[in-house]
Image (tube, rainbow, N blue to C red; front, top):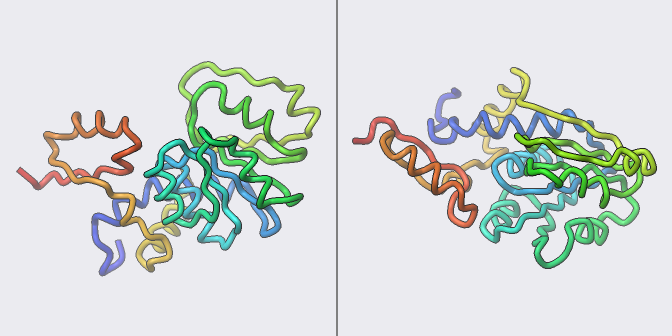
Length: 210
């Protein structure tokens, strides 16, 4: 950990490196326009990594007002509430005919199929959300649109190191992600609170507290 970097901020290196890895694997180019579906920790990390690469505009979509605010703080230029309008509509308004790179950062059944259905022709879809259940897609949708699917997981050592360096230099601001601090004994209850995206993003565990 570089001198001068707080341990609180250094602790966010791992989740932020996940976002950097997803962006690197996407091979996104300056002409592309990204759409980030889901602004939980993974989606926010993707947004921060896109901003770090100078990609714009960044379009992000989430049901939670708090997570949409965090998305803006971390670098999203356009935020969308899918309860009000489909994410793809917000994307089309700013992207026009530029190529699409869609980051699926939720990991619930049905979302990948919907992303394929809504995606523009020749879009690249990066699956960063970890779906733990059986899911279903319709290959003919991908065939007709010539879509590309990229599944990603974790990060490489150099991406972890690069993320730590970016946090230390202030190029990634992780402070807004820390929404609470708990003792070690309070960890089970903290996981329950993390179920609500309206109040929590990342909870920091402070083992030294009694």
